[in-house]
Length: 597
Image 1 (cartoon, rainbow, N blue to C red):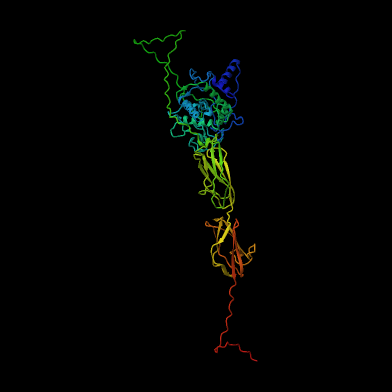
Image 2: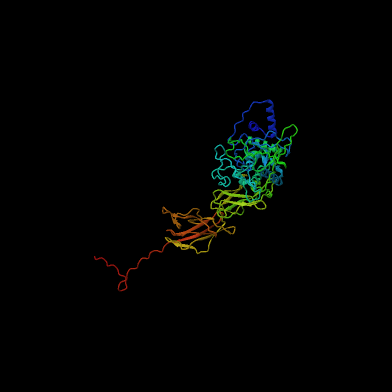
């Protein structure tokens, strides 16, 4: 009867009291059977108001909107808030008892989180409500002494067929599936969410989503994210919806939450009963049901000293009540040592603030004087240490971090600050951006604008050498070297233009005279752009005199105003001497005989 009514009242039931009231009204009016609304195979009713879908994990929900159990609490809800004794022991799908280790994990998570985040006001009954609909309290408490499930609890493959499509994020480490993700453990975390929120609450050195202590602690921190105060209805609703984006899910969890607030009882591990109805209409096919606790049988009458059984006393009214076997008290669960919860540093950061570093500029192929720096802050403006900050360079200037990388990850120090590694400009001028983001968080990043400027030199001076002269048709014997400096410092990498002009007053390269080389068409090249080396030296290539004698000028200029001029003298070749006539035997030059008359 209760299971039947739970299906009829699934949508819109927000508490055990509401369910009881609705059932009473139905019984009094003999109302005809109602038709249950269709189930949403993707995880429930998606008609959720604005703001309800906010998730601290950034992936939409903690569970990937996996299916959940929709059974509601029993109808005979305790009506005394805080009651914990004299409760009816309900069996079947609406089992109200919570297995000992599971209950211990919920209460420990509440106590731990209230000590570190008192403003959240996390009640353990909320964890119990979520644990009930996600896994039936860890499959009825089928856990070992340390709180780890006897076998993994896995949701369906999230491959887009009836569910969300979430590609693998953990290489199958948690869910055994290297293609798609699956919700894992008694609190049904998808691996990407567990990577951020996973905890080691039982101090065994592992963050295990299949351990009820670890999973309950992580669920509590997840629900408290974004500075939620779960004592406020709006924040409570948002927290539950961040777990599974379904209005039906919200109502189901709230129903169990209210029921557990009014009282529950502890049952031995492994004796709880798994719910029946699920939001995907798959029943228990995907999650095995533990065996029911066998009903106790009355003991045989104790024989008397004469061997004759003593008669059972007859109570008033004449009805004989057989004696029942005393119930063995459950063995107390092994309680691991309490360890303060550790909230992932990335989850605590609510703001990534840029730290004033001044203008980020540098000439080509030189180091930037300053590096982008950020401060990781929590909601109160307090610095957060141990946060991994990723810096990334975007742009085409060729700027790189030390080692030639375009990305670098830095951990914030004790002051919550992280500075990017030293930047070195490339060969191209222009603008680029350095973007800083929090690793493992969807928090908006911070960007720094930077500029690579042209390398400058305000002075060009020829390295000592003799005047340059050469005969037409030959090459100048000396190599020309010029040193570039800027404000007295060497200017490595500066680009210097060298051009041969006809005179000191000419502004364009000459049409004749000295040249550097011949191009493919055989034309003389008289202009070159040269780059200073690491010592600021510009070494000119071999210079040819050309065919025409005269005085020419080699002019060198650099960005920043540096310039120098060198005179080039081209001399004409010596004239070829005329050979003297051969002398005669008498020493007198012979003359040609006169022609005869």
